[in-house]
Amino acid sequence: MQALTDEERAVYEWQMWTRDFGEAGQQALKNTTALVSRVGGLGGPVCLELAAAGIGRLIIAHGGNLKPSDLNRQILMSHEHLGTPRIEQAKARLLALNPRLEVSAVASNISKENVDRLVGEAGIVFDCAPLFEERFLLNRACVTQRKPMIDCAMFSMEGQVTTIVPGETPCLQCIYPEIPPGWKREFPVFGAVSCAAACYGVMEGIKHLSGMGASLKGQMLYFDMRNMTSYRLPLQRRPDCPICSQLWKVSPP
Image 1 (cartoon, rainbow, N blue to C red):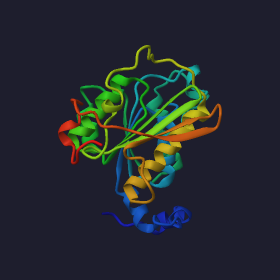
Image 2: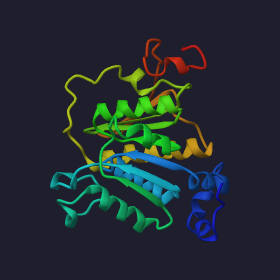
Image 3: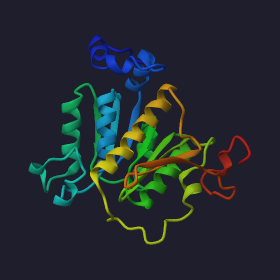
């Protein structure tokens, strides 16, 4: 466990004033490696806020080059980098914000070939991928390796976040047994909605790591920014879930 430096105490002083967080919480962040799947509209602000909060190491995974249609929401990116790999711009921006941060940049999306290794290097996972194929791969690896996963998602004006802890909560495939019909890669996106879901997800991760506050374990926070409403939905484990049922510590409600 690495102690905080005087520089880190100065940078993070104001957030360490938060009740039930303090220096112990800050030290927990410093000594954590977080994997973030994608650095786009959701993953970008997740990375930015984790870097600002003082996470020790980020593993970021995203393939492909920056396109004009990315710029309405991908806040780690800039116009001058159109046509270049997103992952390079993301790493540079994160290090500019927090030069103490260690960033491992993977220039490909989560896949069967890399998921076990990347999850194995992380202490916590943030699922920000738009495709259920990637999300299911992350979910399976996190359950198998007993790694907590913060699942963030959005569509149009709506967003949702939940905390998945293998053996304690429903997993992603309890919530979505199959890919929802009609789901596709491109869908309506406002950057502000993505950022809202990302910020909720980051605070869930920080709370899980530090032991601060009440968690969304076993619940999903849903919000609708069209009407500015939000509520929590209880989540149920599936007795026949092929991914997580063998890890249950208690009988499902």
